[in-house]
Length: 450
Image 1: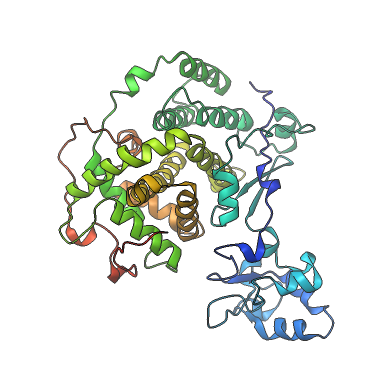
Image 2: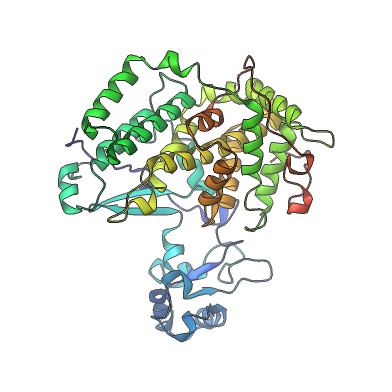
């Protein structure tokens, strides 16, 4: 196990921007940061209409205006958006003038790399994709075998990578390989695989804290054997279910960022479809929405995902890579002590949110629910949530406040809808916070297709 070959996914390398054909261009609705190196490249451009437009469009931050070394790369400057909230360098054909006239080498870093996310781990480049890009979402979600070409020739052995970067968490690659393998282990329902992922995270935390006197390789070997033998399945199936509590947290997760993020039309469509699909209306209660959610899950969500089991697996794989799971961005820093249990809680929040939105959207479209609706939902939600620096912390805070951040609470969020479940008393609900409403910046649900 210590010599496990690193898994280096290759799917991100196949991404190609579709330019003017994109249904939700990344050049509209976002600010475009300019790092000092990009600004220096702009300064050497010859006099031309393009250079004039760039000079007129660059807006320095107060810190960046004092000099190139006065601020971080993302805080130096940005392009001033037009009245229609799009990049001034975007042509009528929705193509970038910089790229078209002087080439990709002159693009700001964010423009040149998006939606690719690159991590360097012990000298190994690991790439994932931001699903806020529609084409990236299609590439990731709709691939029946996302990791088919994951192990690349020439990738160093894990122990060699560890020697090259001694700050790496112990047995990083073995842990990563076990977790990616578990996500793809279809002998168990996905929610049960997620539960086991959380159990493994808690066991690894216990080893790091000295509470369990075993080595990581021993625990990984025993864990994989127990999963393969199915010895844990009977116990998993007795885990608690509380659909109203699940619904309460899901609705509040969906309402995050309404006052902290630009609410875009595609996300409005997503929320409208979700709330309509679970039966939102003037007389809706937590109990009626829970029943509507369960019905949408049984009649439309489950049949579709039984035929497309790889979609949410791929979402999890990409999120694991994007978020450095199970160590997290902070946990990957030298000298840090990661909390894998906390990272699992935030992964569960992201998964429960995306799955919950998809259940409602499936209920809205019924038998017509399709891959197109999946891509629309995941992409618009990712654009709303994933790029906000506060989202993961706010999601974790919500779980803590709801007392859903422990093993029992996270299991309730993970469990599939169970029509036979007998749940404890539901959490108190108030009509004003059942679903996002117009006062929060989201129009009331309307019956229109995505």
